[in-house]
Picture 1 (spheres, rainbow, N blue to C red):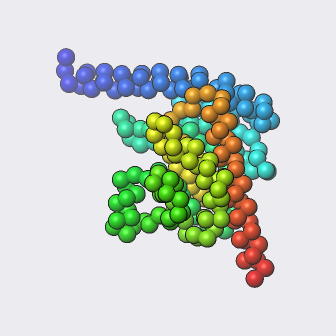
Picture 2: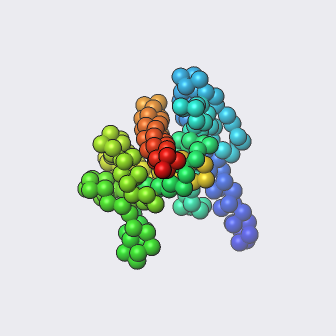
Picture 3: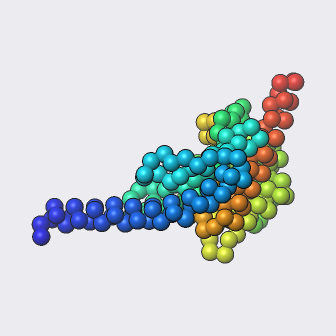
Length: 213
C-alpha cells in the first residue's frame, strides 16, 4: 500500500468519524431546541448539513441564537455550546471572561493582559476577567451573577466556562462541550439571559450618565 493511499484513507476515516460525531450531537440537540423553541416562541433553523441546528428567539427585544460549534484545529478542536445576543451597542465598553489557564497566567506575567481581581477568591481562581472599564464590570458582577458563573466554573469534572465576551454588536456566553439534556440547556439560557440583562442595564445607565453630562 503506497503512502498516498494511506494518507487518503486516514483523511476519509477522520471525516467519517467527524460526521458520525456531528450527527450524534445533532440528534441529541434537535429535540431539545425544538422544545425550547415552542416555549420561547422561537424557531429552529438548519444552516447546512455540516453545521448544528440553531435556535432563534427574542429576549427583551434582542435576537438570541443558541447552538453548538467547534473551535481549534483538526485533532485538537473543542466543542462548545453558546447563547449569542445579536444587534447590541455597548458604546465602546469591552469585557471578556475566559477560564483561567496557562495562557492567561503567562499574559499576566509578561504584562500583556492583566485580569481584574474581583476580590472573590473562588472566581479569581477559576476565571480571568478583563474589561476596559473596571467600575462597570464590577457593577455587572453582582452576587447573583457571581453565583451563576460559579455554577458552571465549579462543575465536578472541570471548569465549564468556555468564553464570555462582547465583540462587534454581539454578546456571547459559551460553555464547553455538548450539553446533555433539557435541564442543562435551560440552565445555560437562564444564566446567559441574566448576564445579558446585567450587562445591558449597566451599560445603558452608563450611557445615560454620559449623555446627561
